[in-house]
Image (cartoon, rainbow, N blue to C red; front, top):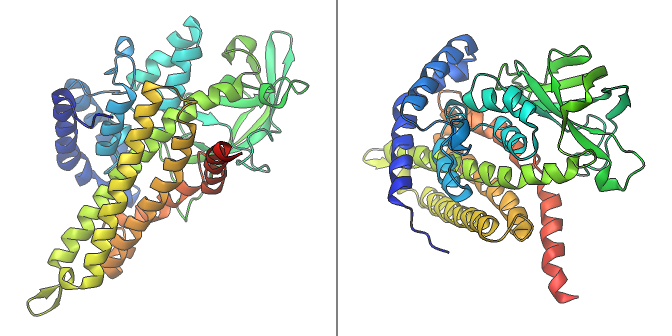
Length: 396
């Protein structure tokens, strides 16, 4: 594996780093106050600047207005953008839109691409992904109660979903529902596009997460599908291939998430070091003179480096070989990086003391919202079991 970063990507990442520092981090106080009306207006302004800089939609195809970066290149971009919660959204590569765009590009019909994919990548609309069931374990995606039953030329969808990220204000949802209940387990569900203004698509609430309800893009919706009728032409890909498509979506998505988490680590590490070097604890002495703080900084640096190299290796293997060949590596980085991130955030918060508990820095927000990293896209325990099984195959 070659760790050389091309001149092109050095330039791109340098431009992004500068933009994040000068344009986005100063917006974080507005974001943390929950002034979403002001924030959305500012985000639109920043998005226009990003497009003028030709840095928009880095991971999406050039023919749809993106930069067309490959997985390794976008991993570096995701790391740079991850230093602020606003980064990916402002640059048009945020979840769940990024994953939805990928599967629309791979499996969408020409009509679906024209109606949904093009405006999605251009940033004219937002979308959401409706998979997680309220009463069933996300750790076993085969357990699904939401159904889509054929009636004439339509599907009629019934079921309840939650953690449908960014559903508040989204133009459409991609819904996982059982269409073929008598088929083998992995061929029972399909993905169906549902415009959110369809009768029967009911957003029950934005789910409070660690005390924050959230609005707009920064929300997680609970959705009730009640006799929600959409045409069968809204089927995404072949019927019964929902799980196959989901795996195509989740593999690269985990790379994106993990590199975003590395960006969060880098931000927390920077804040921790700045605080340690500037916070007086006695005349002529700062927190940085304490050996325990020095140990936390060293441990954080080691964990960030190990996680970062592991993620880049997984991305490289996925590109050079295949998604299937990188299954073990994807599972390993999912729990390794999530744990490293939470360790670094926790140490940074501890070094900040009482200040770390407030929203005067981004640390408390990261502590609240990134805890979910150990749960979504496969809980830590599921990935550990999956990796162990693959490792043990060589011993039986």
